[in-house]
Length: 259
Image 1 (tube, rainbow, N blue to C red):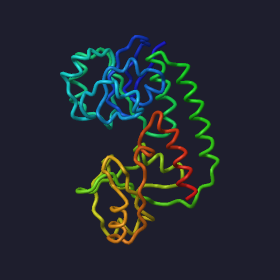
Image 2 (cartoon, rainbow, N blue to C red):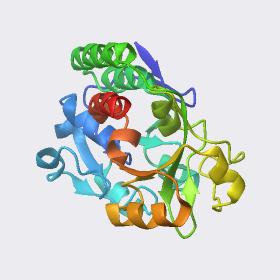
Image 3 (tube, rainbow, N blue to C red):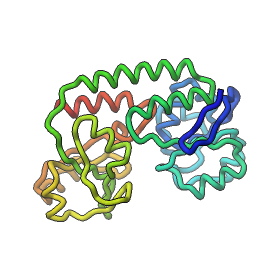
């Protein structure tokens, strides 16, 4: 059977694949599907599950990849993501890695297709189906959970300059499950913005993510004093990591909805 990735490339199943993953959340998923032994390379940001990734060679970051280190590892498959990895880097790696698997989840339910794609290509279909069943159970609980009134929430991922997420991102679609909508800040997926009076008037609150910028409660207190709006710190992994961590992410959303 063949499997199609996010850019339409069709991949055959390969039980003996040597995998380099440049996507932290998918590295975790591959490990949870029982494929840690086939992972020959990962980024320094691939930190889960800690016991498994410790034995896997680091190949740089998600964007500052060590191309020659990957060449030396001789992978058969490279797993990348549209948002997290740079296109020129992926193109350079594609010159010697036979199979490049491109991923691009945009909404929580895309995790089901993602798990089946990884399980299918790397011959872990039974574990992938078990994971999908667990996801569907958490999804049903989230859909049945009581929701509060709709809110417009600005989800910030960086400061100096300030940056947020747009409506077509995975994070925004996670928030939408509990009725929280991000404001329209233009065409960019991760737009820069200023704290204008017009923007502030449109918001019910502001969310500061713990990653990629390490916002803390000190940032929350300072920003609340500055803008006079409610500000809340959120766990960035719960909101932005697809794959395995999305199960905990759905539970985290239920907690937010009930708060």
